[in-house]
Length: 244
Image (cartoon, rainbow, N blue to C red; front, side, top):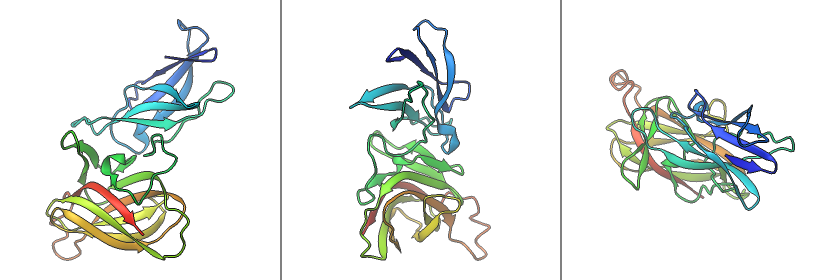
């Protein structure tokens, strides 16, 4: 519970365990009035969000919460999102991002896979050891999203390079790099992923400004072997970086 001015805020997880909601009262013993949802992991991310709270840092309020994996391998990660507390005491719902306390991420620094804030299609985050979390169970159609990168305002180059550090799964795969919206955003390019562990690179279209980036997995089989590899795990994503 947090007291902000003359209002007590109770943050809790309802029966829908992916959400954190809040209720308010002018008395710590209640009664409390339900006010709405602050954040919902279930929109674009597998796993639960069973507790969290509010914290003020340098006069900016944040909601602290957990990102999980799926129900079989619980590898939870502490996260934070900026929130706004309006004059009437309400808190508008916020989206889940990769930002934490940052205004934007640098695409030119290595980004670990566990910064993903969108995981769709059955892929999920798993903890390999105390230092490493990978995105695993990546099959054709899986979406991995990261919000938000600031690519700067350098218009001098028409292309840039993206490098992926992956654990191979014995399949030939593709990563389609899409900006802003995984359903109808601009495709910047495609990176071919081989059978083995390694670093895989692709030259893609350069962009400027602030963008969400999505990686959409695809297989790389078009001949008679396509049916044989249908639904197979393609690779595991460890980390990636963009280069000018």
